[in-house]
Image 1 (cartoon, each protein chain N blue to C red):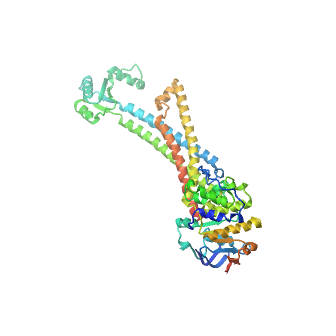
Image 2: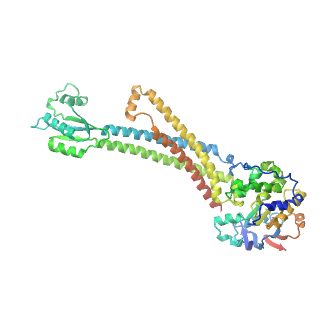
Image 3: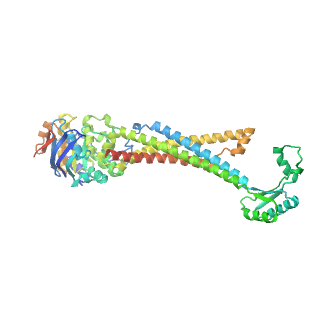
Length: 220
Length: 332
């Protein structure tokens, strides 16, 4: 699904922030991406999302070499991925419902074709009563769940979550982890970037990708 | 993509209470839309009012130019049609020939020409009176070889074969020449065309200035909404979709600015027409009307103003769309 071979990344003329990164993510797998703050977890996720281009090495995404992608293919690949940002990145002028429906709306689908599905997912993540509320009114946990619902609505093959429990209390963090595990059971590969060791210990079947000094260490 | 049905959410909902707050039982959803079809680019994030003002001013100036060009073109067409309906035969006296006979021959030839509605022969006294403004009154014109004039009125819409008439006069009337005012008409035509071209040039400049203002505003809007653009990309929006979102917004601004500017121009022309009509009774007004015709741009002028307003709105939308696409490519 995702394959990195000797990937390196540097900004400008600076030293490499990621060095010789080689790993792959298999379909329906579950992994934590961890490491100290500033180790490059978000950067690695942005490489997978194709928001950054590597300065060296090869990245294959869903069987395609990202160096040869055109814009249309890139958009198609992004539609197979869901992403949960650390700071949620909900659009403040759209309601919770509109935010969650956004990935379907940008595909040009009529609202009537996805309305029931979005409402059902909002109820599933416990936001059924908050669907007409604007994000600034939501609590941290509600925003987190709205962001997760937005990532899930397209039934992605791969879900990338950047510190999804960073802004919530331990109880909600546990519940969110269960949500990811359930999602993984339905066939979605999961990558959760976190430095929360307690969270990782709750699901020790997951693979751990540990970033340190710009290099990646894998613990299956 | 994982192609599982909607019921998967239901399947897992049995375990939902493990991680989510309890939810009341799902009510059947009404068929009314839940989304408000809200623009993805917030209207408040774009310097909309300033841009609408710029577009309105540009549209107003372009519409004024087009209206003025239309007025001049109409006045010129009016002059030309008046001049072209009257043709003069000049008969110069020549030694050994009775000029009255030559004038009569010229008048007969003119009457015989198809398309000529009326022929008026200026008498000797009338011809001499025409010279008085230049030579003064009370002179004895007996010694001067004063040419005689025959004025032909052309039937409206008729095409007169001036070449044939000229030929006839040359062969039958000694000292006769036909003046169909072609030179004057060509000059008037050139002047009118120059004004129309000037109008088109100014319209081009106005559109260019509008396009540049819109391009700057679009870039500003994209900088201000960089976060939104990034999120749209990550949730799978294509560049074309993002560009269309901006384009839709800018089209709305363009239409608003165009409507304000075009509307102001229409009000200006209506008001000016009304004032000119009220002023027409004065000597200055009469002179102006004689020179420029009635101060009315007519339905073609009004249509031009509306077309300009739509054109400006269209340019606004197209330029914003192109700017967004180019900026997205630069970002990529």
